[in-house]
Image (cartoon, rainbow, N blue to C red):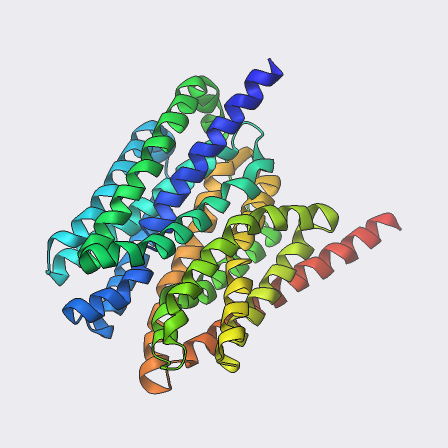
Length: 393
């Protein structure tokens, strides 16, 4: 029986990794390595790119907020299928038109579906006492990013920006089919138990929860600025433009094992301490990229950024599952909502700073925000230590 349960858990884990590869790595962030191709081939302006990025982030915010509702929790199987199929369709459809209005709609929809699929896949994969799989699950985002970084230049050589979108849709189909075959089976097998869990869900909030929400929302701001604009920023430096795509690949490759690494660090230390360390290293990685703009610092900065942003997500979701086991899906949905809100604020501030200061200013702003998030977590950690000491006395 244990062997059967282990095989089932591994199958569910593979499906969850594939779902996040599609939802986040391709549907959400496949746009990043294609931005320069669309600028080169059809003259897409920086303003249009910012608007499309903001539309995607707005869609993600709406999807994250709705994912907390009962209409999602009661129909996980339906939303899993809708999220997978529609994410693939929106990727392919980007290549079929030159209408910026249609692109706007597609990026809005892609963001909405990414959030739904992220929350549903996380809930299914980490449910039934499988929260220890978080380190493996969130590596899926890095897998998708690495896929887009490696294969986009290949698709570009075949047919430019259009073939790149179509190629990502093809790769997304493989991830999507695997995700559906595994996760849908898990949902059917666990339907009765899941129904009982959904009835008892009630998220209780305290100051620790609000600190976690604030820090994760700030991470959304700091992270999205770098994730969206790093390729464009490096390409704007003539002496470094040749490593722009390599930096994106490196970020994805660093993200793949990062969640497992941070899970191990959390076991050796403490999950909150690990989270603070991850925030500090991410801030350092971004700072290296802009403060010392040379090939080595950009690649090292890319490794630090790629090696922390999904680690922060994995640690945060694991901590949330431990804090709120009775309302896991609602907790994940609420955290994803504030993260998405941060991703709305980030590009707006970045666009303003690029226009009125310089192209590097948004990254310095991102570093400041991450240091603020680190400070919030440090306050929480100090309060926990004080409370523990008081109880021991």
